[in-house]
Amino acid sequence: MESIKTELLNARNPDEVAAAVPRAAALLREGKLVAFPTETVYGLGADATNPIAVARIFSAKGRPTFDPLIVHIADRSELPRVLSSSALSDPRVSALADAFWPGPLTIVAPASAAIPELVRAGLPSVGVRLPAHETARALIRAAGCPIAAPSANLFGQLSPTSAAHVAEQLSGRIHAIVVAEPSRVGVESTVVSLLPGEPARLLRPGGVPRELVEHALAPFGPLLEPAAPSPSDAALPAPGMTASHYAPRARVRIIDPASPDLRNLSRVALLAPDDATLARLEQVAAGLTVVARAALSEQLDPVRAASQLFELLHQLDEALRVDGDAHDTILTTPYPEPGLGAAIADRLRRASAER
Image 1 (cartoon, one colour):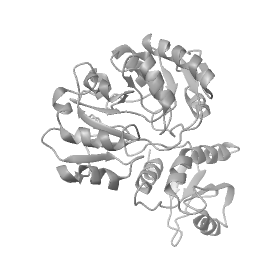
Image 2 (cartoon, helix red, strand yellow):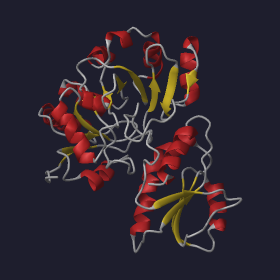
Image 3 (cartoon, one colour):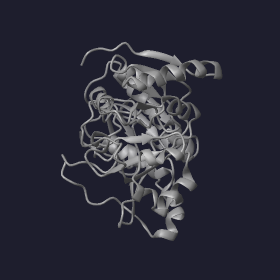
């Protein structure tokens, strides 16, 4: 694709935000691509009602069109621009919005006619969320349109939690990056499907733990798992559902420290849930060349772990790139899954899947 000059728009303090947001909003209104911070990860934004702008997202990311996009709004008053009247009358939509917005939860429900098919991957539904990040919401308001925004990375690769991560993968492919502080939550939003006549389904674990979603939806019935996978070329109901996703360049292998599979390993980086597990992992890897090591938290703290997950994967991947080869591997262990741990475990499983 043709190289684009990528503007860096600093937004680390109020004065910078006041200058960056109008510039970024103007670019979005022109149909251009702007990466911007949210509390989950950095998003790659385009006007969700402009099919040409949306197509640029797919081109810049190398994203298949069967993978739908999430639409971001700044206020609940904007929901009628994104969801159909039938969706707005579903009490489950209000229940989740009341409980978790603004915040890291995406609702998938029937779409309004204003949302192009490309955003929806041809499905009748669309994912929508109201982020908690003030700069993101200011940008959406200034743009005057809902913003379609997947994670600001090449498709299937590590999600970005800082502007530097975005620049590494997308500089020259997009028009601007809003440079702000790293994302606080560090994993993508939880995605819940609320389709007419169907029970609620958890399509993707994320920043809101499943247990809290189940509690909010308890008056309306159970929260089910996703339906059986469709053929590989069929439209996915939500992003982040491909078997291989969130993957660094190095391979990722999840092992059981009690019975580790170390076949074909020689040069590794270690990633563990906590310091105690990291010490055990170092013992297991004693016969290998360990180039870097990290724990997601000192003690088992899923909030801290989620906020650091992608940043540490980026760091370990970079360490392995020095004099590396195709067999270099990030060696890790399963993450305990209650609460927010389910999202961390999901990202690690998908990062380690066969590509």
